[in-house]
Image 1: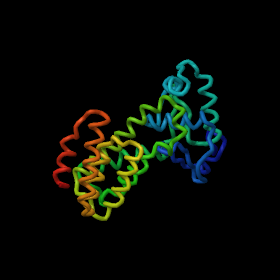
Image 2: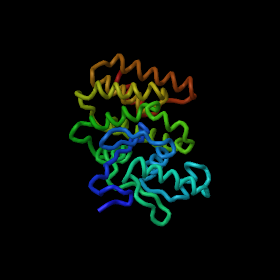
Image 3: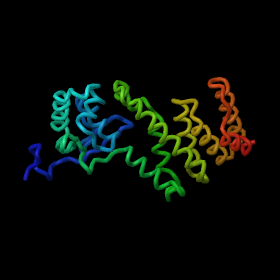
Image 4: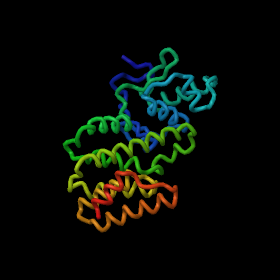
Length: 243
């Protein structure tokens, strides 16, 4: 039996969409998708794997009525990634249900860590944080005006992960990784309070209290100079603890 795309069902690939890298991969590796086909897949992945043709047309082409070009893009995606895109039903495009999406993995990890750190002590969360930290890894998205809203979601994920570590004791064995992740975030966003707080917690776990105090002071001076603001109560509490 063959699929709608002409391949035997058993031969259909399993796919992974990494929004943070702007890549689509199969068992054979990263696919060299045509630019619009890649944007099509990313738009679906960032919107729960399902969007109407009109919504996709508005995102990608800024024209809800330009459905002819959208159908051409969908055809190219099906050709380049057979089985990734389920045939549209009632004007809706859907990713195959077995497609792995990094945002869904991050959201699952955050849900599991709401009440306490997972069994790995948060190692997977730190891995997610490191990947969330680097906007240059997803350079292809810079051409997509609609992705600005997704960047806000990425910043929210970063803040949620940092907050989890502030609510829980940071395992000593993860302190160096936490410090590295915090520095990665700050290298790209020097105003990220959660990353400063995580860095301070990591330094304190490593018994590097003088460095922790300096990092707190750096943050205080920076936000006063840059945005005329005061540190949050969380940062003040950390500063008192570090001192």
